[in-house]
Figure 1: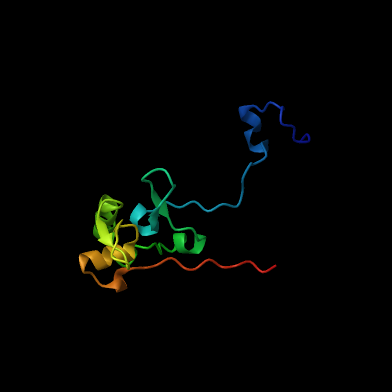
Figure 2 (figure 1 turned 135 degrees about the vertical axis):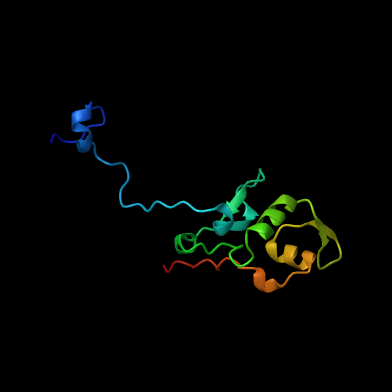
Length: 122
């Protein structure tokens, strides 16, 4: 095979000779509630965020893993809409699953909080 060139034209017969842009990846498909976080996916929209650690994603260890899909749906349907009192007695919009569980009078044991970030050694 010739040296890879970005401008080289490949035919269908030589498709297997095209160098891969990516390799050694794991493909998975999962229901959103199993890998969801209790935070938004971005700062300027109401996108549902996902957990970030690959091991947790592959083992379906999201924030709602213990609580289930019904509580996930209710939490996200009300995210940023329900107002609760903070520790100072001020009103704030509901923005964590832990706060949601307290608001609904549900046990904290239903929460599966994300693991703390691992600091890289320098």
